[in-house]
Structures are given as C-alpha cells and as structure tokens.
Amino acid sequence: MKKAWMSTNNNKSRDKLHSSVAAAFEAQILSGELPIGEHLPSEGDIAREFGVSTRSVREAMQILETKGLVRRRHGGRTSVVRADVGEFMGTLAVTVRQLLSSDPDYLLQLMVARRMIETEVLGILTARETPVNEEVTAALDGMRRARDAGDFTGFTVQDAAFHLALVHSAGNKILSLFYDNLYGLITDAIAVSSRVPTKSLEAAYAEHEDIYTMICNRDEAGATALLRAQIDNSAAYLRVAIENANRKEENDA
Image (cartoon, one colour):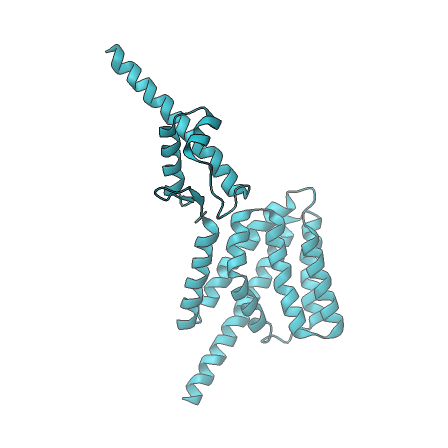
C-alpha cells in the first residue's frame, strides 16, 4: 500500500514538472520572445535548465505540440510554429470573403459583428484614465483634413481607420486580431454605405468628433448610443446599396 501511495505522489510530481516546463515555453512563445521558426534548445539542455528529467521535457513538448505552438522532428530540434489565434482569424476572414461572394447579405451580418465589437470596446476605453491612443487622434485629424479638402474617398478611408484605432486602443489582442482580419471588409462596407445618404462630410465628421469627445469624457452610455446609431444607419444604407445593385442586375439580365 505504501509503495502505491509513493508511486501516486511521484506521478503527481512529474505532472507538475512537465506542466511547469510547458507553461514557461508557452508564455515565451505567445509573448513573441520565442519567434516563429526559432529552434528550442535540446531536450538535455532544457532538462538541465529546469532541473527535470528528459522524460518531463518530452511530455512538455508534447503538450506544446498539441496546442499547435511547436513542431517536433524526429532526430531534429523542436521549432516554434505558433499555429495560434492569429492564423485561425486569418482563415476566418477568408471564409467570410467566400460567403460574401455568394451572398452580399452577409455584409449586413458583418455590420452586426462590427457593432458588437466596437460597443464592447467603448466600455473598456471609458473605464480607463487615458481612453484613447494617438492612432485615434491621427485618424480623426485625417478625417478633418479630408473633410476640408472635400475628399470623399480619403474621408471614408480615415473613417474606417478611426474605428480600427478605437479597437486597437482597447488593448485587447483577441478583439484586435478579429477586427484586423475583417478590416478590409469593414472598409468596403463603409465605402459602399457612405455613398447612399446625402449626409455632408461636415455632418459625418461631427458625428465622429462627438463620439471621440464622449469617450474622452468617459461617457460610455452617450458614446455607445451614438456609435450604435451610426453603425445601424450604415447598415441601413448598405441594405439600400445591395438592393439597388440587385435591382440593376435584374434589369440588365
């Protein structure tokens, strides 16, 4: 009975050892300290560094490989591959583009996803001492210059950049990755929807300036209401644009 108890304790200790090795390397890989393509030290070197057995090192590498963070080669060194969330988001963006090519109504669903992300971001920004970064103010300045120059195309580009900058300001890497991969589609949606209303560039700029001011004043409710209305209006304009395009195709057929 005593031997069985000791064996169980030994197994638990070994589990802790290989888990700690795996956790240490996972943190270095996800932080970028160990970049993609980097070769890890040999199992013997890792074992000596952590004071564990090579068996524990192999078990740790198996955990990392299962997570898609490393690739082990027989007779070779283990290398960092990091098949993590960034790659999955890129695949998602391609899938969304394929859906859009077959059904433009997916653009409207994209606007819903965009609204969910951006309104969530406002809660993060308004809770901070310094709500926005320089990327936001630079985009707003770009919108102002485009407004003054009567540059419609330039204005829509800076419009999209403003919303992207808000997401980046939140500092949430997952939201940023998600939004970054859909950014091209969101830019297209803004460009299309902006051509439907008769709203002036002056009025469009004022909307964004008001959102910016409310964020800086930490007025989450006010900023959220303005942003939701802005995106909902864009979605309505987008629907009109899609219906007009469909109608034109039917007439040309």
